[in-house]
Length: 152
Image (cartoon, rainbow, N blue to C red; front, side, top):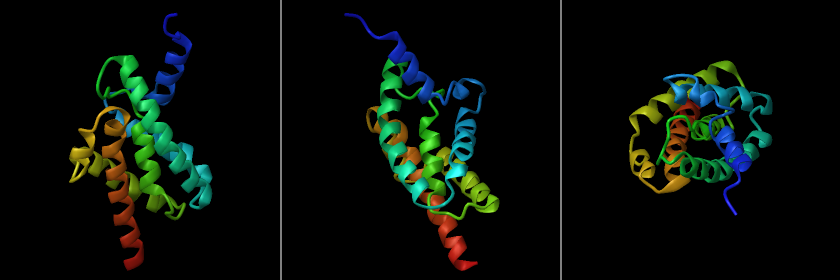
């Protein structure tokens, strides 16, 4: 029996954020914005924390499968990793615009510059490598915003 085209289409559609990742030369930024929009209604509490945990697991599996379907190690059109990263970056932060914007900017900065151990995480195989650097970037962004909030 051959492959299942519908399941492949579904996996790629989810991994690319409903094909949002194919719309621009800045798919990571679009994926991060998509994540902000999708997560905003969940607020700052347990619902977003649970969604973030779910997204981490699902994102690793879906990103890995989509990369295999697409025949590339980490296709730039896969943006579920940015959705996961921004979920981590905003987890348990106040659901206010300023904090979300700061978390977004910091997440993009850390995702682009890949401070230790993000670059090393990116070298892991499959979905864990695709999502790993975004997890690190999200953790760093969240920690910086949390410290800023504690000091302000």
